[in-house]
Image 1 (cartoon, chains in turn blue, orange):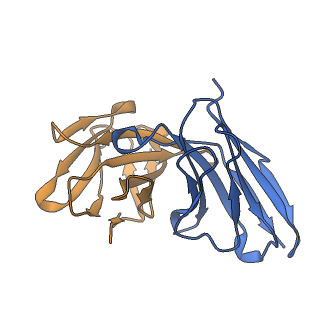
Image 2 (cartoon, rainbow over the protein chains, first blue to last red):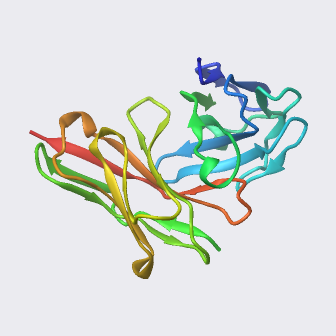
Length: 114
Length: 113
């Protein structure tokens, strides 16, 4: 099993450009998450999904959109990138709630917006 | 509102010495608590988790954590630190809706020889 994979690993954008980050999991998990990690800020939840076709906002959703068309994939989109979106983005998945909310993380995508 | 506080931003420990990383949470009911480790350039890996039962939980890599309800704490410990333990450690609590984890800001562990 590959676990949680993220594509791409690195990306440099210019302000105003758009891009999509892809997250895939092969564990048949219901829940999927997108976080951003910034120095001294820990991990902050952007959006999450509790099942195929469902998405919800997290702590810092502005400037991002997501889609979960297939259970195994969770896409994060930036429609018009801003320098404030320079960060490391992590995707995670979990089986469900409670004790099953152990989240499995991907390796991260380092995004720089110039 | 739920929150997790990791009071120590950075800790340095000598190799072979014991380690304790602090975590305090704010949560009304019995919390689901987690400790994760992040090695440089890597994603997060679960060390251990707690919901109920024995308040001392064992995890991977020789780590353990003790849940103390009276102190709202879930501190991570290791009796003897190895150089490979140098990493960033995150404490997390599940939110009340059960839909997400709330992470602390992390503690960076350095190990000196």
